Amino acid sequence: MGSLGVDFVSPNEEMEMEFDSSVFPPFKLSQIRASIPKHCWVKNPWRSLSYVLRDIIIVFALVTMAIFIDNWKFWPIYWILQGTMFWAIFVLGHDWRISHKTHHQNHGNVEADESWVPMPEKIYKELDFATKFFRFKIPFPLLAYPIYLITRSPGKKGSHFNPYSDLFQPNERKCVVTSTLCWTLMAALLFYLRNVVGSLQLLKLYGVPYMIFVMWLDFVTYLHHHGHEEKLPWYRGKEWSYLRGGLTTIDRDYGVFNNIHHDIGTHVIHHLFPQIPHYHLIEATKAAKPILGKYYREPKKSGLIPIHLVENLVNSMKQDHYVSDNGEIVYYKTDPKLFNFSGKKDE
Image 1 (tube, one colour):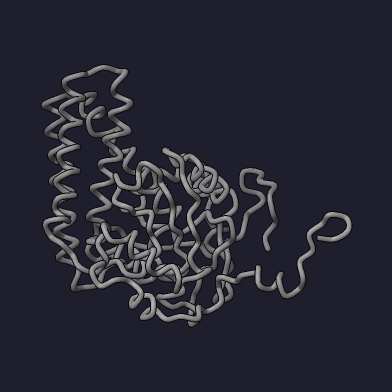
Image 2 (tube, helix red, strand yellow):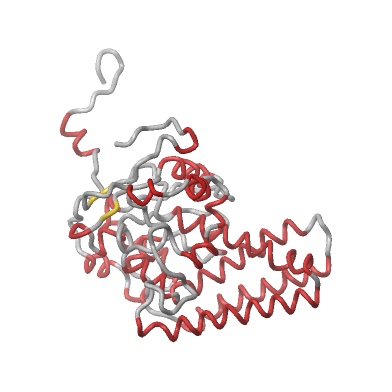
């Protein structure tokens, strides 16, 4: 400590404190894999199915309670609980989806990623104000998932319901047809239930929980790739690799919801090795952290409810608008004119 009571940092110490997350990591994917205990890779079908059964039982129990109680003091509680359970079931099966597999295989790649991928500056500046407003003004981005399924993200063509979409390979078309058929049958079932129980009752039992589920999906998916305290790199061209892209993923602590939605917050290891069952992710992450070093960003500890993550979401939506058209290592830039935002200028 200096004579004026100020702590001084030597140049060497300052260099040690600085960390550039875009630098190619000094370890290989195989080293991370080797650090994870062998039993973490083992899938137990019965244990896996037990989580599915647990979630389904809770869903039906909540429906039964809502119908039996049928009180407006209880409905908001039901909507939050049921929407969260819809999300929990989605987490268990989401890696089966073709487009999500594409997201995992190309994470962190500006040109090929599929989930909340950054827009190049040229595409961003071609958007009308309404599109920008609904994409970046909360709460609208939290309701984006159904629109994304139909039209994908700006700058990308096709639809998840079209087997001939650019999103799919020719050998995947049968799966897309099957998926679209299932969606159609679900829509027909909902139409039938509307005639049986009425529009209002169906909205209360299914419609509102579905919207809560969509908000969970967009909220969690976004925050696992955006909103960190330091700007994280995105890659294109030769600078991208599966390992570097996966290391831009962010772990989050969701408090009481960690167990409910099957520890999806342990997202770094989930992205690098999606074949690891969710019930081994925490142990696998703990084992891999010594190898990852500073490339692993310890999530901020949450209270019972992860209210702290709202700030991350809001700040990111205000600042993370587009990336440069040039360069193979890029960072989000801010449009200072959007919403009259007066924060940092583009760097």
